Image 1: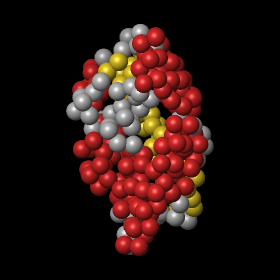
Image 2 (image 1 turned 90 degrees about the vertical axis):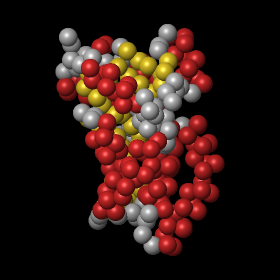
Image 3 (image 1 turned 120 degrees about the horizontal axis):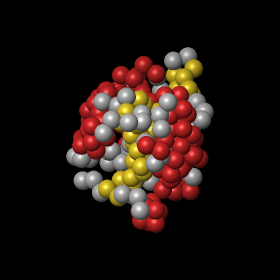
Amino acid sequence: MPAKAAFYDVDGTLVKTNVVHVYAYYAMNRGSILGMAGRTLSTVASLPLFGVLDSFNRKVFNEFFYRYYEGLSEDRLLTVAEDMFEDVLKPALYEQSKDLIAEARRSGCRIVLVTGALDFAMRPLARYLGADELIANKMQFVGGNATGKVIPPIIEGANKANAIRDYCAKEGLSLAHCHGYSDSSSDYAMLAIVGRPTAVNPDMRLRSIARAYNWPILDLK
């Protein structure tokens, strides 16, 4: 059997949360009361803008959104990641997420998470799910503090597909035999590049695309 992998988007596909929920947890656990209040209020005030940017262009959204991490300590971000997983991500996992991954594992797939979230925030989830690899955005740190800039290329849209292609080339995997799972039409390129795409909890546009191409559609609870 050809070597293959199953590539999973995270937000909306495996968990009910998104990158804003993750940042909000960091904002509310920054340390000082003033720091927590300031960042939390700023995040709440920006929610409408986040929604507009995300629907307009995922790359622009990511570049804008991750500026909110500027000044946060790398040590603090790594430390809080474990609690954030227990308090935010783990309770938000769809009940069938682990079954979906277990099924792919039984069929001989490597398990790879491909997400626009930040790598340090996703590592506890990747360990919990038994993922073999995590492809995620990496924050730039200078002097132990986040600059608010992500190290290029930003993992989103077409860059997710490029990352998957590069991973398969490096590991000698057959793209035609690989699986892909996502909820968002912004991940069309990621799904189209693999031989076995599946729309999971798809948005309206992806549901329409999946029906047009006869891709399987899963609605997880």
